[in-house]
Length: 524
Ligand code: PHE
Image (cartoon, rainbow, N blue to C red; front, side, top):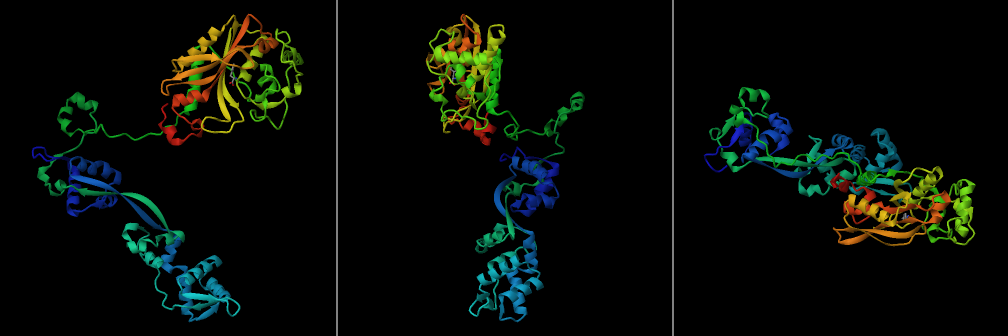
C-alpha cells in the first residue's frame, strides 16, 4: 500500500487488534496475543492477522521451538530435590562422616520412603558428583563424605527454571546450560515437544498508520443470499463482500481409495467383458495333473522341479479325476492316445500327477474350464478369462516376484484360427491403451503353433514381452473330447508388466510394497 489514494481497508472489529499491536510495538507470539485479546487462536489468525497481512500492515514469521515439559517425577524433584540431594541432606543432617552401605540403604528406604532402585540411583549420582565416595577397604562397603559443600549441579540449576512453571522453551534457558538438558531427558525428568511458533509483527506501515488513514468496513458479507438478490440489496453490499483468494491451495484430502493394482485388474476385467468374455476362477492349490500333465508337459520337464515350483509338504498329494480321464492323459503322454500324436514315449506315473502345488500359471485354471466344456458339451464358442495369483520359486528382485498374477484366456470354437487369436490379443491391448502389439513364434509344450506377445511402450521406446499364446495341441484337448474342427485359442499374459508400464514403476516390488506416499499421489 504505497499510493495515498488507495487506503487500506479493514473490518471495523479488527481495528482494536491493530491498535493493540501498535501498543506492544514488537513481535509477539500469536498464541500469547490470542490469550491477551481473548480471541480464539484460529479465529485470530484466519481473521484479523490474515486481513492485516493482506493489507500490508502486519506479517508473521514461523519459528521452530522446543518446549520442555516437566514429567510427574520431575515435578516431585522440583519440590523435594533430586534423590541424590535428598539423600545427601539426610546424610549431613545426621552428622554422618561415614556409614555402611547396608545401614544407609535401610535408613533411606525407611526415612525417605525410597525404593531400592531409587536408593541406588541416588547413591550413584552422589558418587558421580563426588559428594561421597565408597570403599570396601575394611570389608563391607562403606560410604564416606567427600565434599561437604556439595555445590549445585547443572541438572539442579536446570530444575530451578521449572520452579514456577511446568513447561519452558529451550530458548529461554542459557545456552551454557542447554547442553545438560539431555541428562534430564535421560532421567525422565523432562520430555521435549517440537512446536511451531508464529510471531506476529507490524510492518513499518502498520506501525505508523492512523485510524483515519484506513477505510473501515462495517460488516463483511460472507455470501450473497437469495433475499439480497430479490431485494436488490446486494448492490449496496458489494464493497463489503468478502474477497476470495483463488490462488490459495485447498486442504489436501487423503481419501480412502482402491489400490492401483485393483484398479488395473478391474480395467482388465472390463476390457474382457466388453469383448464378450466371462471371468472364471480356479484353485490356487492345484494338482500337478492340471498344472502340468493335462497340459502335455512331460513328467521330467525342468519347470516341474522344486526350484521352479512350490510343492505342498502337507498334504503332499491330492485326488485325481475319474479313472477314465487319468487313463486318457496317461495314454497321451505314453503314445499319443487318440490325438494322432506319438506322445512323449515314457512311462507316465499317476503318483507324480497327484502332487499338490501352488499353481504356477493360470493356464491350469483355463484348462479345468476346457475340461468342463468338453464334458458338458457346452454351447460354442466359449470365451473365458482368468486373472489371478500364481507362484514361482524365484529369488525376488527388481524384475522378479515369487507371487505374481496372470491373465489367461481361452476361446473354444469351431474353425477358430491363429488370426483370430492375434486379433483378440491385439484388441485386448488396444483397449488397454497399447497401440502396437507384435506376436513372434515361441514354444510351449501345450500349444502348436505358439506365439510370444510383445507390446510397444511409447514411453520407453521399446518392445516388451508380455506373455505367451497359441492353439492348444490335440494332446491337450482330445482327452476332454474337444476335437477338430473345434479348436482352443489360449494365452497367458503377465499382469505386473502391464501394471509397471501403466503405473510407470521400474521396480516390480513397488506394486505390492504399497509405499504410502506413492499410493497417495497415484491417480485413481
Ligand atoms: N502359461 C504360459 C506362461 O505362464 C503362458 C501361455 C498360456 C502360453 C497359454 C500359451 C498358452 O508363461
